[in-house]
Length: 191
Image (cartoon, rainbow, N blue to C red; front, top):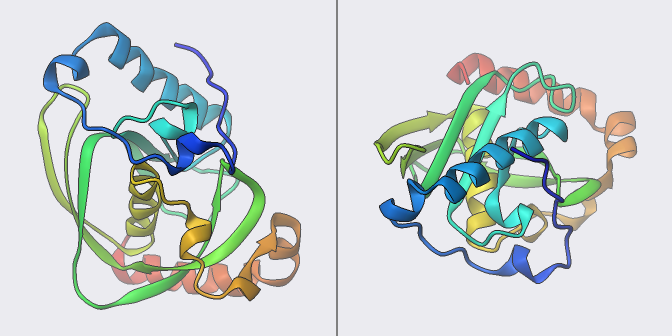
């Protein structure tokens, strides 16, 4: 296990659609080390998730975990979730405005419209099938990470460029109102 360098916006790896992973590759020692490195790198950076392209590996894998995260104190806990070859299906028409940030776009945030409910299919680190519905604020986290696997950054989805802000100005002018909306969403969906 090792900490990996995080690719920053502008690096081509972040704009490259990731390739699928075979079961043989998934079960290899090298790929399992990559998954461990993703977890360590995400935790070290206080991220809510990280995708393989963010550590210069253009493969369809990402990890998500939220546990009393100081960067996102309003996010509900999400147990460590490792996704390989994930696919999302947006469910319903309901959306919420999510102030997002990204380890690959440090120091900035912007409002992205996200579905409040998604169906997720993927493999776990052992190759077992995952098929579940994710709702609420947590659904936004899953959409953000899986976007990375398609070469999409949250800045591509910012609905109004006037919402783009530094982290400091977000905390100063926008955080209180956003946290109230986020808490209402969490209360409604439990996630």
